[in-house]
Length: 253
Image (cartoon, rainbow, N blue to C red; front, side):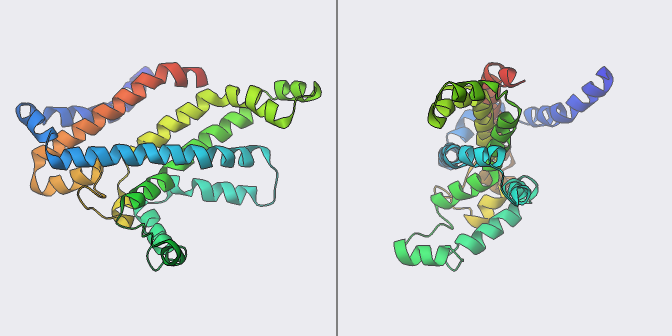
């Protein structure tokens, strides 16, 4: 088992070693301070943080409904919510374009009423990131709600606590570690989103070009820049995941 575990670990370590081995260390500061990288990093952070916040506002209530409310077709609803986990991101981006584009089912009346155009805008990047990332939060929180010990909730209700009090004082504190773990996974997925973003929002520097899109462009014209930006994404993601893993995921496990 240990030997197979080591082989499994190598699947993740070898690509990182290959990347680090090609980093242009002497030119790294100059590459990472170019306008292209700074703009892409800023937009990636805005999109990933915004997508995580939106996912919390919408995804946590959705997880409660899926975990605690019995209704016909709940399995179908859950499958639809989790579909972006297995759907090719480009297909998700195309679906967003057909639904929210200037001539889309929702996009056309939205544009007529408000003048808002989501495709090829920063808001389009946020929408695409939210679409592909929110299922991670929903599935994590729903799992926590399904497996938590509900005896404390029942005892509080028996003692006269209202539903809001039970939710605020017992349920939410019990699932906080899972919520944070889900937020980290959601942020990480949104931070690395590519396919849905390029399909729905395009690849415009300073407006819709995130770090993954910058890597894609640089691979064709500046290999050193692509490697440097890739290293930046790896470092940022590892810092966030390592910083929170012991504090939150350890409690979940």
